[in-house]
Amino acid sequence: MATFLKFVIFFLLLCSMNRVYGLESIESHQFHTLQITSLLPSSVCKPSIKGPKGTPSLKVVHRHGPCSHLNQDKSNAPTLTQILAHDQSRVNSLQSRISFAMGRKDFQDSKATLPAKSGASLGSGNYFVTVGLGTPKKELSLIFDTGSDLTWTQCQPCARSCYAQQDSIFNPSFSSSYSNITCSSTLCSDLSTATGNTPRCTGSTCVYGIQYGDQSFSIGFFGKEKLTLSSTDVLGDFLFGCGQDNQGLFGKTAGLLGLGRDKLSIISQSAQKYGNYFSYCLPSSSSSTGYLTLGKGGVSNSAKYTPFAKSQGSSFYFIDILDIYVGGTKLSISPIVFSNGGAIIDSGTVITRLPPAAYSSLSKTFQKQMVQYPKAPAISILDTCYDFSNYTTVKIPIISFLFGGNVKVDLTSSGVLYARSANQVCLAFAGNSDASDIGILGNVQQKGLQVVYDVAGGKLGFGSNGC
Image 1: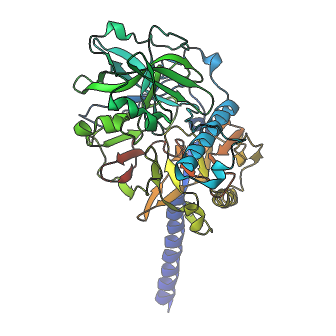
Image 2: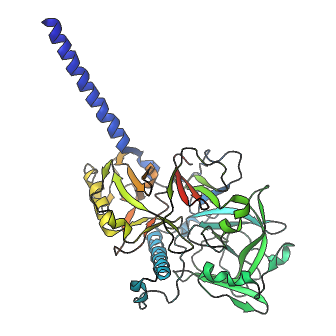
Image 3: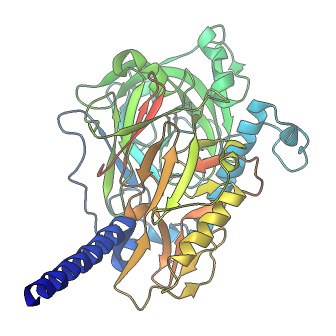
């Protein structure tokens, strides 16, 4: 009898241990444990050692971080409120452009509040890469943007106006490989879809013009030039804008690198060489670095792929969001919530925008799993905020997206929160004002992931531990 009782006690103890360890395993799988210092800006550059090996890549740098040579005057760095205001300007512009392309009545009836012409918006232009232009090559730092098509840079002699940039301004007269595109060329007419504006002429030279949603703009000559990505990767006759009149919120970058789907984007222009394929990783913090790679080199074998949704416009990368999970809990919302407006992935939007019902459910579910932490005041569009000033580490629920094809992707620990300071850290999501507005997967949520654009194959990939 004593032996039997010992066996029963041992069995119950073993079951209890299994339950405890099982719960710990589930809990560790559903939550990230974060050091508070990892949420805050650092003054020291710590370049990532991860990334594609043996394949040419461009280093991706946060414009306002310590790894940036553009960040010399820290007193001029934008505040979080300014970043969010610029971000909202970009979102408004993207949603207007997409509504216009889809011929939505709500856009056409809103002439009093929307720009007369569909424009782009640079937003805060967080990330840039450095490329070489011309012969001999001139190194230029360009914002890279999946929501734009035309690549452009400021050019001497700055016939009207040039803003202050860190690199010296490109002078086409010093390059042996530069030439203008003529007005009679069919290439000139391609500018209409890439910029949203009809090209003009100065003499026989084609003139482009692109205006952004925040009233920034670039106007200049449409030309072709040699573009150098690395010592072994050179694109001849690359079509770009040579800006003679440029004004706006471009920071100290030299211009923009367009990664959209239009025929004038660098992706389409280099399709014969790189197969309409590129990938990038945005660094997990502004004090680290990421990469941008054209072609299939260095793509993770473990990347998961979701098909691109049916495009409603040639420039954007549409995706299907099916569900969202918070700490393993699926949001209690109807699937039609996500299909009403559709969604895109965008490298230039900072904060992910969700349909109102989806954001409301996300925020409430997140708050239920964060009840142990004190609340903090909202910051602009960020209304789910916490005070972590009395903590060295915190546990936050893992947020996962379920995309088309039933592809589930866990956001990294750096892809959930956005911090002003330790006593004001917010959930990095916001709700759209209307259920029919396009959703946007922003760059905070892409941090640390290898994001793979197989444009030719019609699919988008996500790999873990990207950079």
